[in-house]
Picture 1 (cartoon, rainbow, N blue to C red):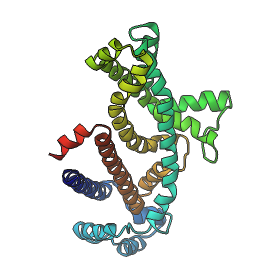
Picture 2: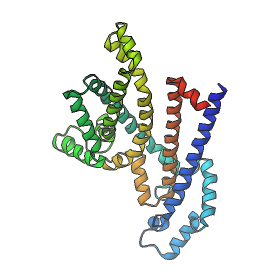
Picture 3: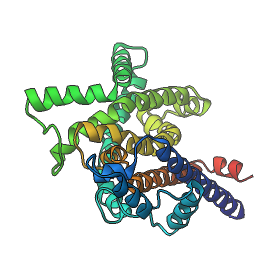
Picture 4: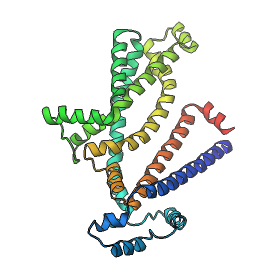
Length: 312
C-alpha cells in the first residue's frame, strides 16, 4: 500500500509539473502571436490614445515577467481574468462550453468501442481471410483520410443530399452523429488493429493451448481468458484517445459549428482574447493529464504486476 501511495504521489507531482509547463508555454506563445487585444476590442477607428489607455487598463504595458507572475498567482486561485471580447469571467465561458466538447468526445468513444470491438474480434477469428482483408483495408483507408475532408464529405452526403442529419449546430442527438463519426473515424482502424493483433498474439500462447487441450470451447477461451489480457492496451489507448478526441474536437467543432470549447478557443485566438485562450488551454491540459493518471491506475488494477513494477 505504501508503494502504491508513493507511486500515486509521484504521478500527481509529475502531473502538476506538466500542467505548469502548459500554463507557461501558452502564456508566452499567445503573446508572441502578432496582434493587440486593445486594438481588436476598440476596432480600427480607435485613436492611439484610446488604445494606449485600454492597454494600460488591461495591464498589457507591464513587463512580461510581471504579467507572468501575476498570471500564475491568479491561476493558482482559478482566476484567469475577464474575457476581453465577451465580458465576464473567462473560466465561466470555458466551463459553459466544456460540456459540449465532453459530450462530443464521449459519443466518439462510444461509437469507436461499438464499431471496433466486434470488427477486431471478427478480423482475428477470420485472420488472413477475405473478411480480415476487407476490415483491415477499410480501417487503413479510414485512418488515412484527413479529418476535415471527411467532415465536409459527410456534410455533403448525409446532410445536403440525403438530408438524414443536420449539417451543424446542436440541440439533439442527430446533431451529434456526423461530428462524432468524423472525430472517431481515424482512430477506429487503429483500435481494430490493436484488438486483432492482440488477440492473435494471445491465442498463440501456451495457456490457450492448455485450455484447448482441456476441451474448453473456442468462444469460452476467447471471451473469458484471452480478451481480458487484450483489454489492457485497449483501455490505455481508449483513455488516451479521450484526451485526443478533446484536442481534435477543435477542428471538428469549427467544421460542424458545434458550440464546444474548441470553437470558443479558435474564436478567442482570432480575437486575441488572452483570458479565454489561457483558461481553455489550462482546462484541456488538466483533463488530459488527469485522464493519463486514471489510465495508469486502471492499468495497474487490471494487471497488478505492472503496478508493483512501477512502484519499485
